[in-house]
Amino acid sequence: MGLQRRVAVLNKRYTNRVLGPLSYKVPPLAVVDHIGRTTGRPYSTPVVAVVADGKAYVLLNYGPETQWVKNVLAVGAYTLHRAGRTIRVTGTRQVPSDSPEVPAVLRVAGAWPVRPVLVGDVEN
Image 1 (cartoon, one colour):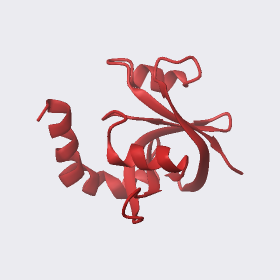
Image 2 (image 1 turned 135 degrees about the vertical axis):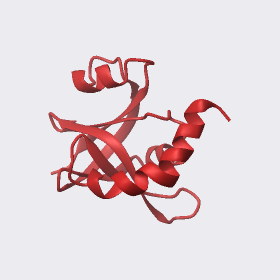
Image 3 (image 1 turned 30 degrees about the vertical axis):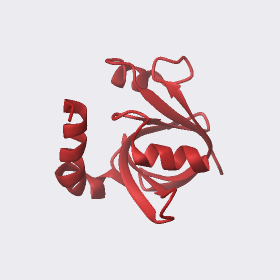
């Protein structure tokens, strides 16, 4: 198991349990609610997200192969809880963090190495 995967397992077991409740209210932390592709079960995943100019940007720290990312991309939509707000995001797609369409704060956070970012349209 690679180091990145080990960190992901550690975060899932311990860190997310502590930061999960804070993620709903403390930016840039946020929570993505999504539905499992095969189970149909609802899931919540703590993430780093920015909302700007009518779009939501979620940094994929563990890459696009995680189950929650596959779930979101399969449906193309999710619910984001950030800073006490609930935001519906549609038209979700993946772009590299060094893309000019990604806000500078996420380009810096994801610069080493370049990581994918989910980009979607915020519904009002």
